[in-house]
Image (cartoon, rainbow, N blue to C red):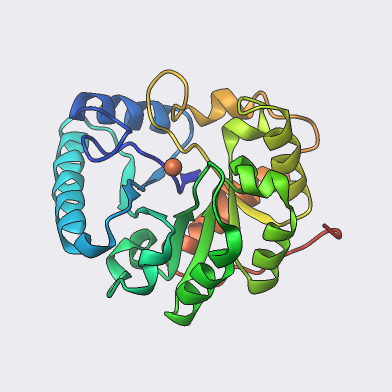
Length: 247
Ligand SMILES: [Fe+2]
């Protein structure tokens, strides 16, 4: 499997607090059927992209060396989780923030209430620059719960969705669970990922959580969302959106 969203890289955001934790998260991931893990630290500082990229790349190198010393054959790839705001309009080169150098960009919005008028412009800006945005955990946003039209507008534009495995098994509450199941069942969500931050709760043990999936989520859906589509992202290949029903 391929986990495209994680905060496993150490000392760079609110994820792994040190290299030891990063290694444990990588080991847990590998033992749970994951071969490839994308490191997607939160990114906010649009006026300081190069410093972020430099720090991230140095830490990835340290982690890769430590993985090879410990004989953990997990492959780790660079990425980021872009916090969308109006700052994006001023930002210059976002290329280094995509997943594994592809056109796919993992993005997040505020989880708390915010002015939603500019959402579509943020995504249009990314498309205009040639990126394909993947919205992280659409099922978790307060504003989405208030107004599902937000998701319809993004679907119409071709935005891809990644739901959290935690949400599918109910760990983020009932509304996120129902919405995440609907999005996967109907083909609007193309990815499932861990969004792992720590070894206890938001962890990297995919199989442990996949065993708790509700019946609506079939093995075929899991294969699409955790193997087939993520592999296309790593390879920078086109993903066909297969919608099974009306939203
Ligand atoms: Fe995240």
